Length: 466
Image 1 (cartoon, one colour):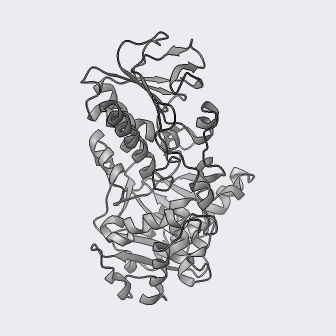
Image 2: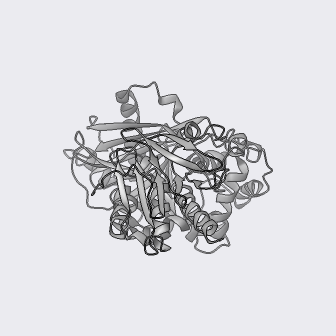
Image 3: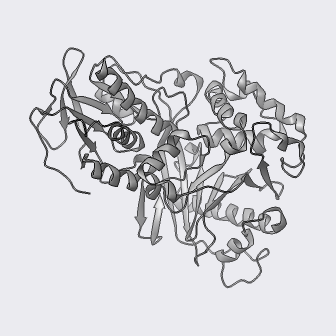
């Protein structure tokens, strides 16, 4: 990416400084370009502290695994309107995989059973009346418990609305809560989750349809955005860490970067602060932000031989592993609410996860007729190419692996902490906030991050039009 010479004097052109090159910052820049800021004579500069864009959605080449990996796996859904519109706008939508139907494959490690949850397209959930579509050993009436989430009151957490002792909880609601909220049911804000339930299950299978990156998230959501912004004339500066903001009367006057003289803002310059909540609180004394960071751990394994099956994923119940993402060259695992693993050694985590992956794939491979369209037996065989038996081989040796602990993956999305989320516009007239931790009405997800950036851009432009 082309880098530009730093300006340390007041700019005469109307300039928007975007601090942070994660998805919220990229989304803000893309939205501003799409709405004609540069074409109207304005200027956009993005300042990113790191050496690459993407934030917690970054991808990189791992030398040990000899392939590209994502820092963390992310599952998107058809209800992610902002994310999908953003991907289409930057030309990254072709790098996302959309299955033809809406279904989710699961393996229960405790009972060694497996099933495919298949939702119908329309908003009337007739799938619950089909034993072949719903979760085994459940009745249609069991799913009515989810309606309690829609009546959640402020201050309630999910465990106040759903019974953790309900057998359906472990097989449906718990994976959903932990995957979306990165929180246990006793900690997750019920009203925040209820919004997701309305937008997904409430609108039918099409809104729930899983969407994953064909290769890496960067190829779908980051690299195309950088190309889009560079073509539009946005200046992107890597290694530009903002250390301090100088404030005047209700405005930001100067930006202080680690290796530069203060950058003075002109009377029409604006700032979009798209950084993590802790960094925002340090830059803006007095700003209240949600706290209680939560870890997500990802484990990547290189396959001994390359598959040619395309990307897919499956859920695991009653294990440390929660989601397994299958790629042609690697297997990647996501463990949400993983603070308890922070002190574990990487090899101990990888050894346990590898055993769970093998057990889950073995269970899936025993019933291939349940999973048309994806050959789990072939994946199982690829773990140990020298073994011809797809279902009964011994546990293969641990392959090369990479454990990535994102200790500040999200804030604690409890009812109390959600109340601390600040709005896009604060008391400073030329500064706007963006990030999945701001008050988007959504959980801290890719969709929330992208929405926050677009929201900051809209607020900025609307205020300038007054």
